[in-house]
Image (cartoon, rainbow, N blue to C red; front, side, top):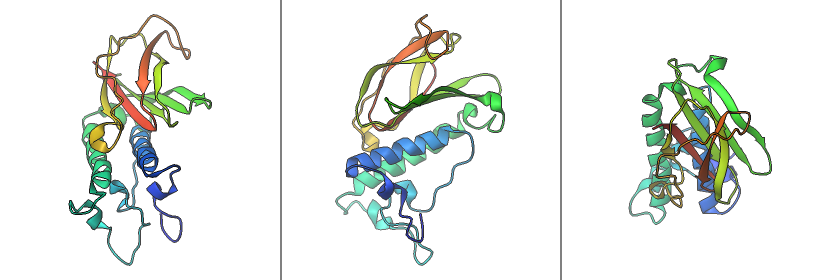
Length: 203
């Protein structure tokens, strides 16, 4: 992010829409993954220029008079919402250094470019994080889940229109089926937005 390494958004592949979508997906993946979050100034609103110790961030990117302001505001708003949900979701931080607080569901779906894992709070309440890092919608994507959750609901989706995404969502509660998958006793099917991360909690 400095001394020629470029900013996160400028490292992402694809056109400007895909670069921002990739950045949003990555940020939500990082917030959900064990460990602490680190961003250089300016990354929270998709600044294209790399960070510099010689001057401040390019705040003008958030000026409503700037034509692409909405693109940068969407990423900024996502980071704000990530922080809000993080603070109110103990599964994301309570067992950060406890191996029992994290379980992979999908870590090897190379053909699909999908990662999915569970985080657990101290009381056992889970959060499911699913990242689709391919530029296509994956309709009816089946994921193995525990059989002790009656239903799941989206608590965060980086593809929402307010963040600059395409609004591919799972608006209704998602109920598990008694069909084993990914080594789990039950499974759910989700519509996975392109280049996006979705978080789900028990409904």
